[in-house]
Image (cartoon, rainbow, N blue to C red; front, side):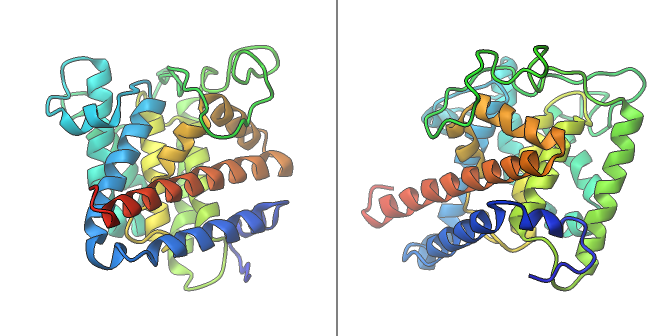
Length: 303
């Protein structure tokens, strides 16, 4: 692997990360080689978008059954419905933002937030400022159905015996804005580098983690972070047709594991960063499994 001058490249060499990257790459390639993908790739993409949106909304506090999301047309009746509608809008538009992401990721983030909250909100698309805070990242507990990534603590990952991760105050707006600018500069430099550097999985996980850490907007930061991760995975070529809903895997792993992995990212240690990268890799792998099951169902004529 060529590291060049990409500051993210060393993360790809952390303990366990090369193996996780290789495993994800193998499974994604296997999914893309599925017979159904030759004729019905567009349908798989659409189903992946729907399932990913449902899972991201669940992590944001609106845990609706898939068929309810599929059936509903009105998403403005109550807070949960608005959250589901926001997730669906982000999922639907993510693929149209790829070219802008490569040159102006901050513009894309603003667009994602605008889509989530609607243009009737005066804070739509605008980062926090002054003394504005941010909504909690994990307003509702989602039990794990795959794996256990917690330390067993009943609070789902408290820091120093205090508030759980995601309930802590976010960085002040000025600090968040400065770090967002740094992230944007890093991504722009990658876009100008033809080859080498960190693999897509690592870049997507860093974007995801940094947005959760900064909570740059007053609301829907989790939805925006997960949508940005999906955009990176597509733009960087790991999942060019957007058929691997990592959000599904993150929901299956549960919010307690999500918190613990994010705590590792926030710590910034090699062990903590490796834990976060592994969590994101596992989530993506479970998303691949979800779409593989969709392809199998289509092949049997069940979809």
